Image (tube, rainbow, N blue to C red; front, side, top):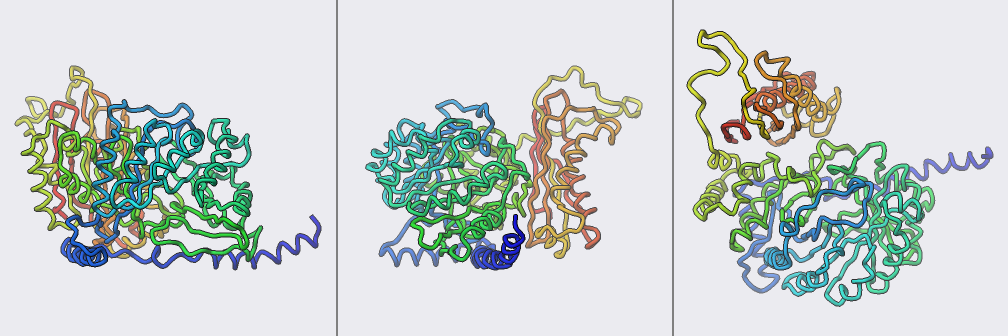
Length: 610
């Protein structure tokens, strides 16, 4: 490179930096802290909102919108039609695919349309169909038509890989489809085949061109991975020159099974810098619509536009209006969360629409201010893939594993469900709608034997002989808390503790600790653990950090000590990493909340102990 050319590039650097800085100013509504309401405040706010809606519509509504505790109104429902997919994209699933649940576990047409109608009367006006790959479902045209005819639904969209879209597109448009997103991660045929593990570029691009004939705007979804397709960003932008396309660059996100690697992650500012370096001041920042998840831009004079979905580096949780239903009928209030509740099972057990509405509202009440798993471009815990049954077995304060078992069982009597409704009606006075007291109410607690098993008849210590015990899947869950100072709580939330990432280190320490139980506690048996996990719930308002640790094994002795140790080590690690800021922290309420798989089952918790 000549000195003259190098000198010109160096002179252009400050200019590009200034343009980039101007283009990446965060929106006010995305950075303002959300105000979490009490139950009383929320009820008053909802009454005002309903009155406002009634005035605008000219009638009285008996169905209030689904608001969470931060007064975010949910108007957008995404429904997965199938777990199947005819691609094997690198960022989505392993090459061998994923285990599929039987067809009878999937939602039927009638169940999908019933749920759409139910959500619509509560203010949902936009539905998007996803997968897997939704066009694999043979009855997709009928589903789209049924949704489009539902009163209150204004938009019906679909997200597809485009492989077989051409077969259905005319019928889908006639059925009422209003919006379409097509995934395409490379414009290079060989690279496309590598990223999707399918040689199908020509068919997908043909579907894009066909879609442009039916829709005024077609959105393209591009998951960007470093050293894979990050050198094609400008090429995709150039597609918008004479086509009314909306290219959305999506940050690579971690999910269970997709082999997320930070070395393959590239943030949106780095992507935008490439575009600014090419187009300079011709890059224009567009005004985002309310609840948009995309930061929108265009090149001056180009027909189309482009944008970035920045879940990892610049979240948009403050304006989130989305709810999701999985192909097997589970409601998810956050894409990156593992808490789910089965609406399918409740429908098949005969629940009325009003009962379903109450369950949905309870779930929405537990939606967090933001998906705390993702901070500063790294994952603290990955959302589990839809084929993982254990994705429902988390003890975040939505529905506990044991309680879900009762809630999802068709043997649950009407009296039991009345008890469920009664409990939650009474617990409306509690700020977070905790379900742990229900967990205790449904437990099969068994009193311990009167004699101690770890001492002989002379009172000497002995190890229990477990050789005759049956091998089974043993699970234990422990919970504990640490009361922080406000300063420590703030620094943890902002990841500013000098020793490093507190929650990640504490999580790793808890797993290591669980594996060392037999070396730490003399009479415990060495156990081959199948699973250990620790999750954190940070209550910034109260300056408290709650820890839940789960241990599992297939063996002939329980894992209670492993769960308790994991929880305790996590709390001690938090204390150690934060004690330079303040030593006025208190570890409290370390206890076992669940044990199953052995001779006895134990469930207990009391959220009001702190």
